[in-house]
Each structure stands twice: as C-alpha cells, then as structure tokens.
Length: 428
Image (cartoon, rainbow, N blue to C red; front, side, top):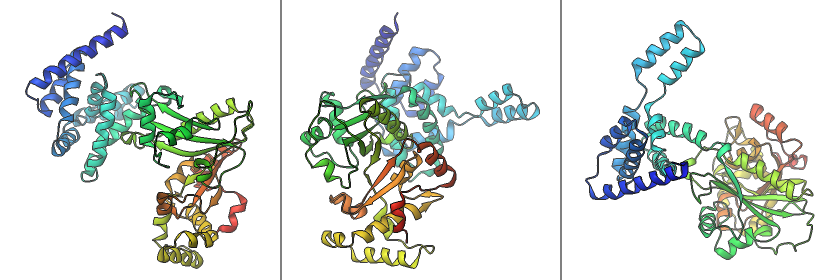
C-alpha cells in the first residue's frame, strides 16, 4: 500500500470511528487517556487519539480544567526511574547514561501529545487545545509545566524546515484571503476592497508562512509597501493612490507596515524573525534596486507608560509625562505639541526597560532582529486604535543589511538600543 493510500485508509477509518463515536456513550477523559497510552499498534493508536481529541472538544470549562490538571499530576516522569538514571549518571557520567537520564526525566505528557498528533487533523486540534490552556493558566498557574511541554513540541513541529513562505495575491484562495482579513491585528482590513488595495497593486506585497499540517491557515503574515521614500504616516500607505506601474520599477524602499500573528495557540513560538529575513531576500531578488528595508510600526505600550512615574526619570521627563497624562489632549492639541510627543515616545523606547530590554514589545521584536530606531513620527496614525495606544505616534525601524548582525549582538548582550543620530536630541 502506498503512503497516500495508507493515509486515505487512516482518514476513512477515523471518519468511521467518529460516526460510531456519535452514537455510543461518550467515554470519560480518563478512559480515553488510558486507551491511548495503552495502545501500541499504529492503527489502534490513531483511532484512540481521535477519540480522545473529540472527547476533549466536547468538554465544558470545568472538564477542560480537570483534563489539564490530570495531565499535570498524573503524566509526569516516574520519580524512581529518574532517581535510578541519575545515580547511574553520577557514578559514570558518560553519554550513554546521560541519554538514559534524559529519557527517564521526560514527562509522559510528551509521549501523549506525540500520540495524539498521529491522527489526521490533530495538529490543528492541539494548537486549539493550547489556546484553552493559556486561558486557564490565568487561574491555574500550576499548569505552566504542561504549557512548557506544548512549547517544546511546537518548536520542533513548527521549525523553519517545515514552514512554507507564500505570496498572498488576489488569486489566492478565498479561504485564505478571508483569514487574512480576520487575522489582521495592526491595521483593520475593512472589507474585500480594502484587502485588494493591500495585495493587488504593483507596489504592494503580502507574504505569509504556512505549515503543511494546518491547511489554509496562515501562521503569520506581513504586509509590505514599495516606494522611494520612508513613510511617516500610515495614511500615506493605506489611503494615498498607489504609484503607477512601470515596466521595470526602480523602487528603493520596502516598508513593512503590518505583521500579524494568526494562531494564538502558537504564542511564544517565534516566526517573525525568519519571516522578515526571507521576505527581505525575496524582495531583493525581485527588486535589486531596493536598498532600504524599514517598518512603520505602532507604539503599543506608550500611553500606559505615560500613566506611571519612575524615580529614575529626569524631572523634565516626569513633567512632560504628567502634562500629557493629565490633560488627555485632542487632535488639534496633539498637532501643536507634536515635538513633545516625539520626545516622550523616544524616551519611552530607549529608557523604559523590562530587565535590560525595552518594555515596548514591538521595539523588542525589531531591535532583537537587528534593526535600529530610525525615526519617530507624531500624527502618524489618526485611527481610534492609534490614538488610544500612542496618541497617533508611529516609529520607523531600519533594517540596514550591513549592520543587522552587529546590532543584534549588541542588543542581545548589552540591551543596547541603536538609534539614528538625529534622534538623540530628543533625549530628556
């Protein structure tokens, strides 16, 4: 039997199992777990995995909590086996005994998840299962160990070797395009016409990562505007007419203006760094004239920062923050005070820290990828969301291909925020 025919056979078997499952009494989670972990035959394990996933899906909130608690309490490594393996390694610390120790200390949950992932469509179910887990962990932080096991496997299953970079265009399937509209997390796509304006014109591009186990489900996507200048507002990208097509367009600037993660169940499984690198390489091959790769990025944590003072801040910075926090200025006043806004944003991005790295998550992402802080713009995003986040401010991060590795190393080792010289006068 060929591989494809075997897969069809398994899919048919699982379908029949689902049909029978709907007519029989629903097994308990404990029964489904024992059945799956007790099966050694490949086909029976695949059927048992689908039964367990379907049983889980039918649980209410209390049932899901009980399921994860059971995994946390009853599917750990065996203490006696860990102790024995450790004693052997301590007595003779060689590679063979180290491997035995690693195997003995692996929680049984990992093997459970691997067995679950054998059945058709299981990867989608497991990603959805982690969405539930992340929500429940807010009240049950002791479930963090289960989440660590999910992340351990997901980092392997969703490694770069399995990711497929695809260009999103107007000819892409409607199912994927509908998801692009739904998953856009930075600048809302209002309708199909709005989507077309972002992916169809000659100076617009959109790229997404896909995984073969998640059919028609983008993992992350980036929207790009091509042109000849670095944009200072989102309206200049979303609302101004696109540049006229040329036979051989000499674009010099590529602007990443929206990056959206699509799968909440893959939180903390990083795809953005690889996505930007691959898209940069792809654009360079298509348009050798492009020399500058920049972002037009939101400043999502800025307004929250304004509400809190820090004893280490200068008197001038504290006064500036208090002025904005207390007055809550309207659009006209924001325009009049744009230079003070730029000062505040720059100081937020360079001085507000989470450990040794910037507090702002978007800044951490781009600086960690080797970009530098290039410019700060007031009145750049007049949307309701932009005003709520940052009084309409946005930021350019510059990816200078000559210095990406250097910037990355300095950021990782020192937490250094590399920025353009023209911005340094904004420090207070």
